[in-house]
Image 1 (tube, one colour):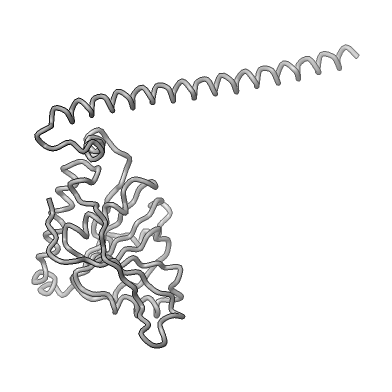
Image 2 (tube, one colour):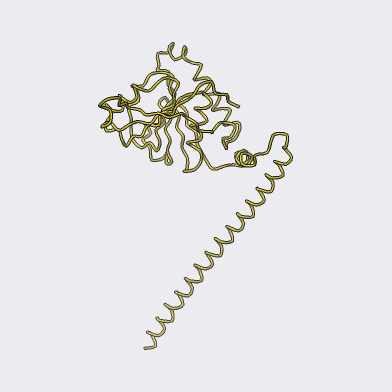
Length: 250
């Protein structure tokens, strides 16, 4: 279980028309309180461990990046259908590292000049998130100890140059639950203590049975709907044939 050592913040960028004037800032923030962690993330354990190891390696690599002359940054691309946990993954990463999160809303950014001004004001130990990315960006202005996260539902529609290795260092597919990930998700909702493992297993088995039954019912509904459509087609076809025969008789 990850243990937080500092109060992380969630930053949201303000529209540029609000940047001037007394006490106006480019970013507004609130306390970051998302409960998502790698313990509760519905994903295969092997995949979660791989991501955690990669994050740990990055956070301890300041000397390495300095030695090779590269900015201390790492890019992650989270891709997959809607509702597969991309936002929860970002929260798990932030909670694991005790990093702040900058949620960059591109629709309020007019051009690269404004983007650079926003990035310059981000702090170290932070994750900069750009959701539903669909355009090329200049992200060179931000400093070190930052993780850049792009999310998209449609990776095949992105410019390959935008997500190439070296820019987006790690590509993570967020897919619908397999059995192992589903078990994690189910356990999250059962609220049983660790010592009640047998009770959890029983509940899990019942839940799986219920889901299988629901799946069978869904299949039956689909089959019935298909039969209904075929029946309607047959009726329309018969009507056309009857009308054709009547015309021929005339």
